[in-house]
Every structure is written in C-alpha cells, then in structure tokens.
Image 1 (spheres, rainbow, N blue to C red):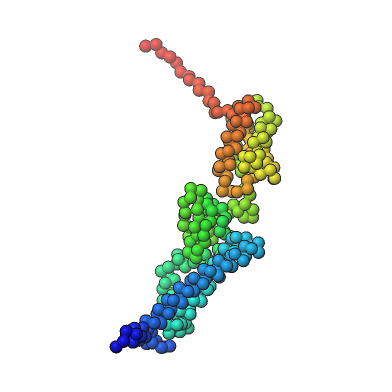
Image 2: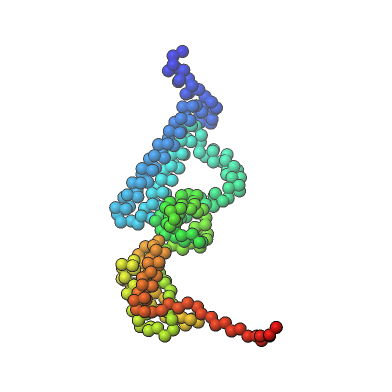
Amino acid sequence: MALSDRVHEILFHPLIHLAAGPLTLASILLALLIIVVSHLVSLAIGRGVRRVLHHRGVHDGAGFAMGKIVRYILLLIGVMIAITSIGLKMNALLAASAALFVGIGFGLQTIAQNFISGVILLIERPVAKGDFVQIGETSGTVSDIGLRATRVVTRDEVTIIVPNSDLVTKEVINHSVPTPRRRLRVEVGVAYGSDVEKVVRALQEVSTPENGVLADPPAEIRLERFSDSSLDFALLAWIEDPSQDMRISSNLRFAIERTFRTYEITIPFPQREVSVRGTLKNG
C-alpha cells in the first residue's frame, strides 16, 4: 500500500458514527484548524475595530470593550462551525447537554457569575481599560478586562487579578469618571498667633503648575478647625492625573515646609503640661 493511501486511510477512517456522519481524524483536524483560524481572525478584527473607533474619536475604553465583544462573538461562531464540521448537530448537542449545563452551573457558580459580570462590564462600562480605580484598599490602573477577571496594575507595578463579580457587586471608586481630574486635600497646622493672611498667601504660592497643581480650577484654602495647639488649614487643589495623587501631595508638603520657613510660620507640635501632686516624706 502506498504511503499516500495509508495516510488517506488513517485520516478518513471512521472513529465513531454520529447522526450527521462518521467522525474521522481529518474532521477533528479540520475543526481544530477552524478554531485556530477563528481565533486569529477574531484577534485581527478586534484590533481593527479598536483602531477604527480610535480614529473616529471614540474613547479608548469604549473601543477596547467593543473590540472584545466582536472578538468573542467571532470566536463563538468559529467554535460552532467547528462543532458542525465534525458531524455534530448543534440543536441535538444543546438538548443532550442541557442537564450537563445545569450540573456545571451548580458546581461552577462563581465562574458563571464572573463570566456574566465580565459581559456586563464590557457592555455597560462602569469600569474601562485605562481607568484609575480604587477597590477596597487597592488602587491601580485597569490594564485588561477579561470574561472571568480584570487585571489592575498598582502604583508598585504589581498586577492584581480582580474577579469581575467584585467590580459589579462591590463598591468601586472610579477616579477617571466623569473626568480624570482629582482634587487633593493637604492639611497643615500653624501655631496660634500666626498671621492668617500670611498663611493663606504662603499656601497660594505653592499651588502652582510647577508642583503638579492645575491652575484652573484654582486651589482653595480653608481654615477648618481650632485644634488644641494649632490652627488647622486645608489646601484643596486639582490635579490632572489621579494616579499621581500621592507624589504630588508629597511635593506640596515639601513646598509648604520650605515656604513656611521663608515666611517664619511655625508648625506646632502637641504640648502637654504635667503636674505632679504629692507629699514628700523624709525618711
């Protein structure tokens, strides 16, 4: 027997007989090829959709979500074509596996919940790629939204995998919506007897673009409370990038300390008077 005939016999030898025809090694390889091609095509078209939407001025987060949805739809179509190509009928397959899906649903409730939450995130977009968010005690930038989990990159360049259900059911602070601008709050106390107008002038001097603060809207200085040993002021200033809040807050504190020394404004420290009462007895 020739080699080509032997290969042909191996590829097209019936493994099992299905309702739509025999299942062969050739049909299995064809199904795998269809899935691989569908995956590559879905990736290319998804990227194309994102580029087109970006050129039309659509927000990157919306383009990312639309590209993901198109990618998943095309991949699903490819899987269905692959299943049909090996001789399985979709209606019969769905009917036969209905009970199996119910059992899987009970056993994999968390995965199903995260999957549905991922679809909700891509459609409703309460959180989008590139947003700076705070989830509990964790703050970071959303780098990717999958169907099961979302990746958030923290300030320390550490990637945290967050289940999609947490983003839908729990409290999430999105600092990028409706605007990426964020207002900082830097508190400082000055000694009683300080010239209040001089304090306000000093705080206004540090609220400059050189220190990372936006000129519009202008910074606001408030006298908030009369504490035990200080007059407590608050500097409220706007910044453009919410992920830089800690760095800019630190820069402002350095600048405040330098400016206060120039203006001879004292930053007090708590002082306590201790009285000792008692009777001394001579031994």
